[in-house]
Each structure stands twice: as C-alpha cells, then as structure tokens.
Image 1 (cartoon, rainbow, N blue to C red):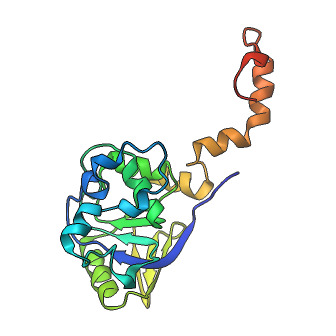
Image 2: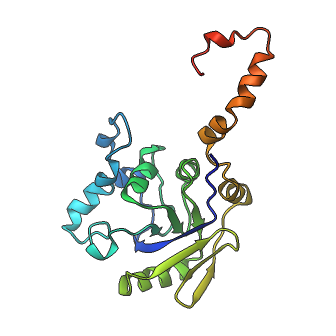
Image 3: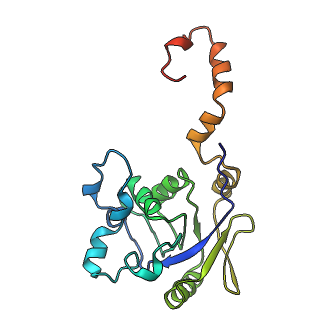
Length: 202
C-alpha cells in the first residue's frame, strides 16, 4: 500500500539547541530492545531528567505535538535508527530544522518522516512563536515547499529526490515489495534456477 506524504499538519514543539546528537535523543542503554515499541517514552530521557520537568517533551502544552522544530546539525553522532524511531513513537511526524546529520536524515526518510530545512531566522521566529502560542497549528506542505502558521508562510527546502519519494510514496521499501508481490512471484516463476516452493516468502 502506497503511503504518500504531501502535507503534515499539527501542533509544533520547539527544541532549541545545535548539535543535538542521537545519544541524547535515545541513550545507548535503550538500544537493546527487540522491537522499537515503547521507545517513545524514553526519547530525550537523560535531558528530560536533567531539566526537572522543564524539557519541551515534558511540558503539558506540547503534548500531542506532531512537528518538531530544531536548529543546526540535528541527529548527529552515531547512526542508530532508534533515534528517529523514538521520536516517531512519541508522536512526531515531521521535523523542521536548519540542518540534519546525513544518516539521521536517511533513517527518517526510510520511515516516511520529512526532515525539511529552513533558514535560521525562520526557525528562531517559529520557535519563539511556539513558546508563546503552543496551540498554533503548523502546516508543512511538500507540494509548494513551505511551512505555514497563522499569517506566516515561509519557504522550506528538501532535496528533490527525497521530496519525490515522500510525495509519491516510494519511501516505503517494504510496502513497495508487498504491493508488487504478484509481479515478484511471476518473475521468480520464470527463473529456471529458482525453486519457488523452497522460498520462505509466500
């Protein structure tokens, strides 16, 4: 089933700071999990403990937010896919920032989470607006490549290949395989050296 990502709307949560790495997003001790279920409860767990309830992910006005607004080089550090998984399990569906670490960006894309960039002035304005008006609805539009809130519409950037993968639904590699199951079976049946009956996939 194709899952196209064209527009993401929801409340925003500001997370101010540069170079927030994946160990801060989800500490290494949580990487031993068999599945990603439950990781959302532990996202930024050490930062939150140090902030004594003042971390954005603990503040009541941001509960239920779906768009994370960050700054420069977000997701740097180790390449753990648990980082975007933890963010997504908490409820985040899109991230807007000044820049992203390349591997983190790729891991998000593989989950259908847009990571778009905006200029520092726009991000500062948006983070300050969300701090004062946490119930503002943000709209991230990949068709016209802008983020909107209130009367503001600001440009965002995303490389064209990633944008097309999201808007066409081709980001979901597993979903594409499932959708093309009959064609795969048909092709395999025509390959003389493959014994289809012995394959694990049916």
